[in-house]
Amino acid sequence: MIALEKLKARLIADEGKVRHAYTDSEGWITIGVGRLVDQRRGGGLSDDEIDYLLMNDIRKAEALARTYPWYESLDWPRQAVIVCMLFQLGLVGLNGFKKMREALERQDYATAAIEMLNSRWQQQTSARAKRMADVMRTGVWLE
Image (tube, rainbow, N blue to C red; front, side, top):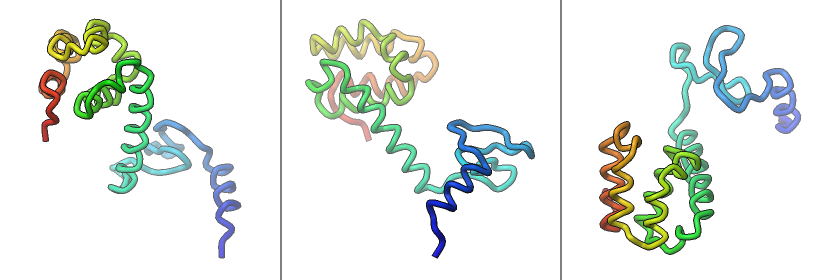
């Protein structure tokens, strides 16, 4: 049987380990340890790999959400809105919603929803922002 840890170490030494997409020596888009993802060359990710990455990203966004003192007081649908916003906008982006966050501290969900729509985010992704604002206002998750 192959010694997987030795093989892994050899491939990392030969290919390098890159934490972002890059163009390899042949001009193909690659990630990680020589993983071809360039569609022009037949590369890509499996559904399992996409789900794995997504779940990691959701866990990271939820961990960030838990840093807000008001997060735990929200019901599940409103928590999900905050996680979705963090997923899309990151911590710096969500921190830009000062009036929304202040409204959430007061459990004023109607004002929080209004503040979500009074944003550049709403201009950039209007349907998404409206869906999330509706959930924030009503506390009902939209399927």
